[in-house]
Length: 634
Image (cartoon, rainbow, N blue to C red; front, side, top):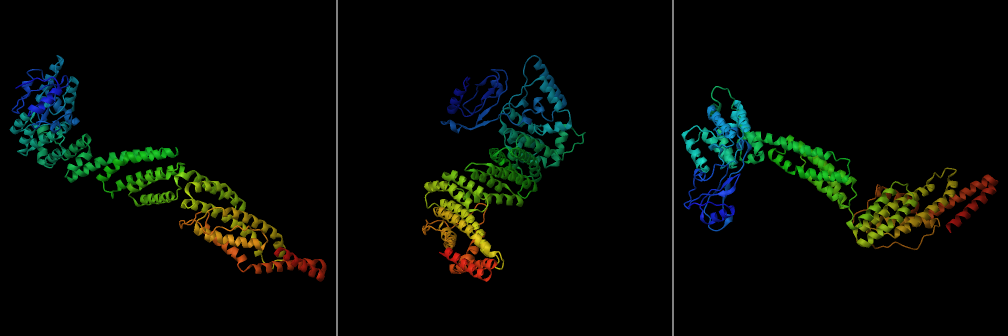
């Protein structure tokens, strides 16, 4: 039974039910139109179909098994466009085998010229249009093909990727190949191992994208010096002195250029081939990574977002390349270490630059994504240490980040702390800090709640910074009482300094009352704060400075045990300094301080009275001094 089909849709429908095997014939001019088949499963020869129409370029699809109902189970094997060196091989252009005599090449060339002059196309059996796309022959393409085969080395190169015929067995196999029976042709070549059989199996495997089979046959062929010598003499004759030692690498280089080293490497077992492919594949990968690094480096100094985008682009564009490079080279390889470390450090720097210049609330998290990736690809110890150091620093920053809902308040408070730390250690600046930060502290309290650990931490930090100034100025004012008692001017200096000390204590107590209104972490409040508050109150009472009856709350919400950290200040040193100095003034008990002050005032009166009126004046001066001391004590 024969049938002419003019619709590809009808053709597929009929094939699903009645055809065991068939050929589609595709021509560039018509599309799917003609089909010839029999129910016995035997395909009609191509020449039978071409009696209906002139010969035209085409390829075939072979349906390998009978299908009764479902289209999804149809097994299509399509031979379309393949490697360029196969598709445009000059031997194919001239319609000859790689070892065909020169006169046959010239004859085919002349035939092409004659047909082209009258506007007709010409074809040859070795066009194998069933497996490769059609050839559009022109006088120029024919001349170019001849030119490509001028030199012996070029003849050998193109012969490595084309058919050769040297035995009667080859003749039988090619008959099947031209009839569209490539499987039968390969079966014939597999029966005997020889030069032509291996070469033709390589070409067939490459046409069908069966790279494993092609590499297997190539390793046998190129691993046998006798085969190679025979191959060269068959192509260019025995007169030349051709070096066959590099033929294998020439073959591999073409495959890598056409197919890609990564696709070939899994199929190669020859160690020298693997090493050669590795070297050939490594350079393009290293170059691509280096180029991407150079692009990223050009964004330095162009703003935080530019650096973030550069880092993310660099990571994205080099991810596959660095993975492939790791597959070709060991991580112990110096070349891999150098490019991996360079890539990692540039991505790390992009993250650092972005974070340092960005004002975005989530800048730390975005930077951490880049820095952790950089840490994961770094290999050298110095690069790994630098990545780890920056990741650890950023992690501590992330751990101390405020909740997102109070980011604005946190930034405002830290800006006040920054300005505060640039000012002298004066109580007036502490009061300014407390007043300026209090609205932000209250806002955080409303949003997060009085027991929130972050709220208590930031509030304690503000109080701690303010308290350090209070302690510093009070200790400085008290230094008047630490002068040498033998100094003749000591008593006068003490009397003149009392007013200043009282003024400082008054300001200190005002600041303390403001700090009393801030919530603090329990450990800090019951420890350092209450201790220094108690000492300050004692000093005020000794010098008659009024203190309110307000006492700080003894209980605070349960909080974390972490100690507050100040901005650019050390609490521990300030605490020790303050405690020691203040205790030296107050803990020997207040009566001792009072007596000392009385003696100082009496002695001062004595000295002044003696200078004015002799012994009598000295007695009167001493009495006046003690009277003044009594007034102060009251």
